[in-house]
Length: 414
Image (cartoon, rainbow, N blue to C red):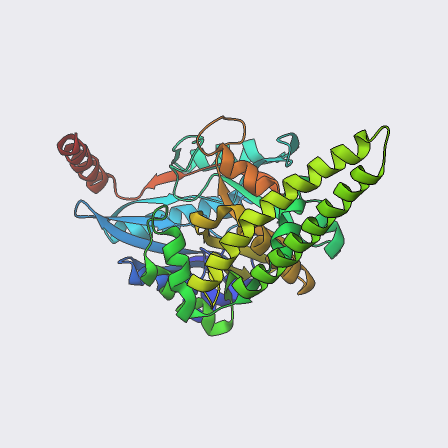
């Protein structure tokens, strides 16, 4: 077997058919990262029967030294130790000759799987052997990080959508189902957007996400060439919202008057009527306030209000939520709940099997990310725990110089 640089077409064919695959090991992602300042190429281990292992390699200069990344790791059967050993050695030699100091990988190497209620439901019986083999190949494990310090998230929330539509909804947390129904009743609708609408996503995420609008556009541009990406947003129809509010206001106003008449006409024990009237009057007051708000919304935003947005990539049988956001000023509408549910239902009907909600933190640790974990897992997701990042030194003399320059740089930062 020999290692060679693959053409775009060769790598694309291999990555499409390899399991488990990743959106981060694609030609489209390589082109996107080229726009972000990374160089890229594709390596493949080949014999007479074809490609046996491959990887997208991204390269960037750090402190003047070339450093490589294989996002989501090599496309190789990690259970095949001989193949892993051969591919690792060949990649190491290839990169070392090109003065690349090291490569970092974040393989899709599942360690454990947890249920939505944080219970351990599965472990990888081959994990320890695979881990030990990587270490024998001089991969240095960078630790079991709990948050988002790694190249890619060490934990992901993934929903099984290879189920009947009604079952997917039933698997969602009861409180979330209530919020989704209410968002629908409030007149919120989900729309299939395009590259021209990506500014909605940028406005929703600019304060929490390091990538800018151009990155979103580049992703869309390259993945859209083969219809692998979709953009959606939710919108409050302010005209409909006002009509719905007016109807509810009238309904509870009428009910309150009717209950008042019942109290006047009836004598004796009226506890049930009184309690019911208290409940109705409370709702009436709520819709009275909502009527003022809805009237103002229609006057100020006659074309509606964009509430939430989501960018997804379709790859093989899985849909990946790349980035999503919402307008915090309208958080009470729960528009993101509705948006994500609609996407799960849509892609389930199209035949996709999994909906990857993206990264979460270690669910066994209380942190500022606990709310994020709870939100994603409440969609009936399972939490997959991966191994984390590994680093392989590919050019020892240059790596020593690189590490010294990194130390100096860190000293200056302090």
